[in-house]
Length: 266
Ligand code: ATP
Ligand code: ATP
Ligand code: MG
Ligand code: MG
Ligand code: MG
Ligand code: MG
Ligand code: MG
Image (cartoon, rainbow, N blue to C red; front, side):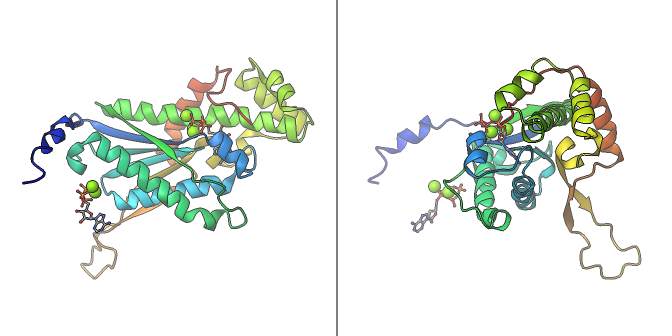
């Protein structure tokens, strides 16, 4: 075989299996979306078109991979939880990361015109992807609580920051300076006393992110033909259900004392 003397190079490809019996958490994040948001004139603090496009791309990924049981999105990122027992691509790490990141990215581009009909793409966006393994349900719960606390912290900061700029007439430098070192309570107070904004009235999507989960469609008890019987559908939950609200309240408590956002506004 003409190829055989070269075939040994294949042995340099090392296997990268993910530990069995652990939860696979896959997260992707837009590459340099600060710049991407600028170039495509995202509205501040939250461009709802961009968030809906993220949700749509995530929904496509969830539909394509039945082993994804839960997804959570905020800003330019999405997290996907895979079943502990998944054998997707024999649990090969780079195969899963690259394929899911690539599918999400192409769906984002594919659906772009639907959400931004008047804004042509200026250049091709890209996303990074990574996998973290978690051994227990507590880790998984804490993971999602961590991402949702991040959503809350960033949104409170960004909402206050842009109120100071857009309604308060401050420059971005002045607004950054005004918010440096402030606690949640003080940001709530600025919003309420100066701009008549009750933070808790802001759309839950902005404060808490979006959650995608599968909804089981129960078998028809009469044994009749239910066209969707045995199928699963995907629901995009914007207002958290009671269980999520439980998570949210503990999250909010943990986030109370923070001073700094993990991502800068602007
Ligand atoms: P990196 O490549 O390290 O992720 P980044 O510029 O993407 O860099 P992030 O921390 O991921 O940094 O922050 C994403 C940024 O994208 C936000 O700070 C915000 O400026 C912008 N952005 C993303 N989604 C939206 C949105 N829906 N509305 C307004 N701005 C957004
Ligand atoms: P995996 O998901 O594991 O990569 P695969 O089916 O994509 O599975 P590859 O080893 O990547 O397997 O092989 C790609 C296959 O795609 C080729 O065997 C060939 O059949 C087909 N293919 C790719 N590019 C072309 C092309 N330009 N013309 C015809 N066939 C192509
Ligand atoms: Mg980042
Ligand atoms: Mg990013
Ligand atoms: Mg991000
Ligand atoms: Mg190939
Ligand atoms: Mg291939």
